Image (cartoon, rainbow, N blue to C red; front, side, top):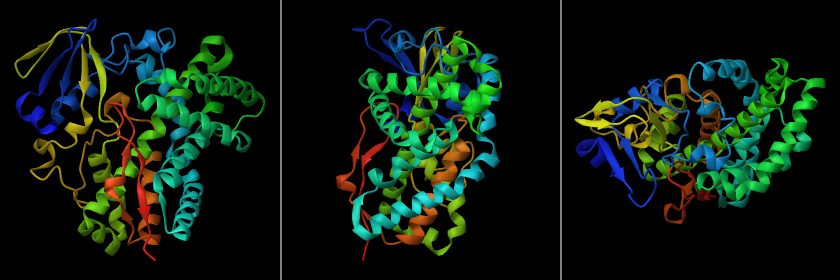
Length: 380
């Protein structure tokens, strides 16, 4: 379907006359998606990131949109503040804890001989890392994991209202944690925001809570999706796995290729601020436009005729897995680190693992591609 869109209808117009404002456009070629992603003046995030025109109202975010739904210059100012928590030093600091966590969970799977690697490793790993960046103390980690699971599941399914109780509890907890960080600051994003005075009034606290919600929804299922897709690719293409086993130094570059092919965020929408002419089609101002990252990442115009195939030596550039431009994912370096560590340890400790591809189950929803179950077996 993605190939047909790229080749025959690169500015696809979806019409749903039964719904108010029931139309939107879909961009699928790499060059077009990249150009739209970096042109925030024309393709705005300020009205929401889905194809639903009433998204902000139905989610209650109209009065206080999160970081991902801001355009420059408002987006730029807030991003500078939160970026302090995602420096290379921060990523390097958490890596030993990530590796210890991965090793412990893989050894548990090895002892059992089989299990669901999503449940055992790929789901709890990013939750642990997100908790670290947000400064959640150890005594709050178990509750945080529960809230995160409920919110991520509902968000992936496209119905965040299904996690109302978890959202209320999470926001209440972080409202208290903001106050705690005034007296007990740490080296985490929440502490940096409090120290910068962002939480000095009610609107500031709401901004912090909106940011927390963004990190929880954006930093969990995407990493799970990438890792869950990776083990399936390495099951399907044993020759590529053998290259990594024979030369572990390839793993770092292979992560880019795996991110390209798995594309956990298959697409997000923007809203046009003016009429746009593209490939003979006019996208009128005010129309939702879906940037189909998953299709763009497999575009042979950018990555060659074998773009649908895994090549751990490809070293692909300008992948759209984390978008590009001012909305490039803040947590990209942390996600890459988690993926690298997990793959290094997986290949070292379970080189002959098998995945039951027929038994893989996927989360519902049109935006994030995330397996909920990946049956995994370790050869004795």
